[in-house]
Each structure stands twice: as C-alpha cells, then as structure tokens.
Length: 447
Picture (cartoon, rainbow, N blue to C red):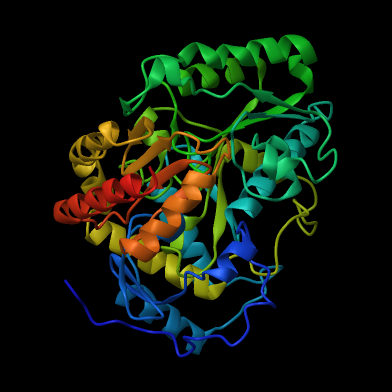
C-alpha cells in the first residue's frame, strides 16, 4: 500500500564528504548511500521515492511509528512558546509533569527522575549517582563498577568501561579503573531457537559472588545490566537470572542498575522490563522510546531513599554536581508528554504483549533458511544469527543490510552477522508477515 510521502526539503546533498557518520562504514556508505527523505507510521521514504517498511523502529526508538501528528504538533507548539529554559537553578512546568508521568509508569519505589539527552548520558549519570551515593553515605571505598560481557551501555567513558563489546573499547585506552565484568548470559549450544526467556542460564548470576570474593563487597558500588542486551544482537535474560542478581546485590549492599534504554516504553510488553521480570532495581536508565525518537532525551529513574540521601546539608548548596545544558529541554518534554499520551490512548504496551506469541511464531519460521544458526525472540524483538561468510565476520550482515534496503524495501538492524528486528509497536499482523517474508528473501539473497 502506498501512502502520501512526506519529504525533506533537501533530498540530494551535493557533498557527502563533510559528515563523519557514527557507527557507520563511511567509505562503503558513501559509495552506495542509503538516503531517507521522509517517514510516516510504519514506513520510511527514500530520496528516490521508494517506500521502506521499518523493521527496526528507526533505532529501537520509534515505538509509536513515525511522524505522529500529536507529537509533531506538541513539539511545534512548544517551540513557539518556550524554546529553551536553563535547567540549572530554573525550571519549567513540563519537566516536572513529565517526571511525574514517568514515575507513575515505573515500578513502585522508583520515585525520582534525573533528565539528560541520550542513553549514553543516562548510563554515565546512573554510574555517577551510584558512586556519589556511597560516598555520601560514608562508604567512599565503594568505587568498583560491574558490567557484563557483550553488554552495551552507550559510548561515554563510563558506558564503554562497563560495557563488554570489544570494538567499542579497544581504541580508547585503559578507560575507568576498577571495573569488572560478569560473563555473558548467552550460550548457543544450550539456548538456540528460544522464544522468550531461556530455561538455561540463571546460575550465571552467581558469578557476581565470585567477583565479590575477588574484590570484596565493600569496594563494589553497582552492577549494571540490560534486561535484554539489544545492540549485541538480542540476548535475552534467562529465567530467574535477574532475580538472582537482585538477591546477591541485596546481600552485599550493591546497587543494581537496569539499562532499559532499549527495553523501556513497551518493547517487551510493559512500560519497563523490570515489571515483566518482577525485579525492582535501584535505578533504571531510559531514552529512545520516551520521545518516540522525535527529540533527543534520556534519563534515570532513581529509588527514593537514594535521592533522599543527597537531600541533606545547607539548602542553598547544590546537592549533586552533575547535569547538562539540555537536561529536560522544553521540546523534549513536550515530545515526551505527547508520546506517553499516545502509548496510553492506543494501549501500545498491552498491544505488544498480545502480539508477542504471533511475532515469535512468525520469526521462528526463518529457522530453516540458509545459514541461519540461531533465532531469539522476546517481546517485539528478534535476533537472527547468520553464519559467517568467507571468514569475514560482519560481511554477510552488511550484505543483508544493503539487500534489504535496496532490493526488498526493508529497514532492519545488523550487529555483526546478526539481523535484529524491532518494528514499531503499531505493526499489524499483515505487516509482520510482510517483514518476515522480506527477511527470508534477504537471507536467501546473501546465502
């Protein structure tokens, strides 16, 4: 079905050289550009007029689809009313309203929000809160941070230090001192072709006991994990794993941070994955879905007693020396409020939860396609691992990305040789069928 195509006023840039693109093979891209000129609901539109179905929600963020009028109009109205308000020592009503709305969606006990502008900033903010919290309590020796192998926590120095993706770390020196890592929860031999949470793997949380034994609990400030590791290829937490982490952190007085930049706002069928798994972390980082990707925004949900620990001393003194010029930016807050309204009015979290079984069944039909070595699904996500081609890791994945875009009018994400599918939560059953059919064609094309 063709729909009216909104288009950018600039459709053919005359020079591709000036822009150094992030996380992109720049030379390959500029030889064969994948250019987008517009978007609407489930589709992007290319500069040459093609309609591309979005199997990736942009980059895990456009959960309600693209160019939703309620969000666009809220941003425009806010820009004409209050374009910027300094966040240090001043406020504006939308910031407080949005924080209250987010707290209302969060698990009970996470009572405060600190705003920033991205998932990377949210992670670094949470890590700083953890360190400062222990220091304020008189436990200044608690400086060690624990991440996980194959974890992705953004690109700040804190985030790549606790992250566990080698290419994100290896060029940037020694990073933060005093960081250790839990093992990845993924074992293909024991978990292949799993729908939802794997049965095997909860015991891997006990590796935190080993790390405590090496360093001493009194030196460890926080553990940070993704309930579902998205950027590394959709690695789902095993059944019981997160609850076991919570138990060990409680035992030793260690803070537990859930990085929900991807899983927040409906991706796993709930406002936050913490609700799905019945585990209350001490902090949750969020971004992406909070504004439907329309304006950059991130933040941290924080347990009430952690916040209150800082609220002591003279009232005229800044309690926490941290923040950003664009924290709680008025346009981002307007987008966030309109986005939360859409999620509620269209019941998109519940919709995702109801669609999950059909989605999982549809994706699993790909298991017999050539070179498919594993498929994992949870919520409205899927990771499809393809065999490495010609001893060149990532080559088949990049070929699939190009084939999808140019030959099959499909946008998907790739992580190495893993295809990631994460469509907007407004996806219909018919569009699920279309996406899966196109993915099958792509996999055959790169066989």
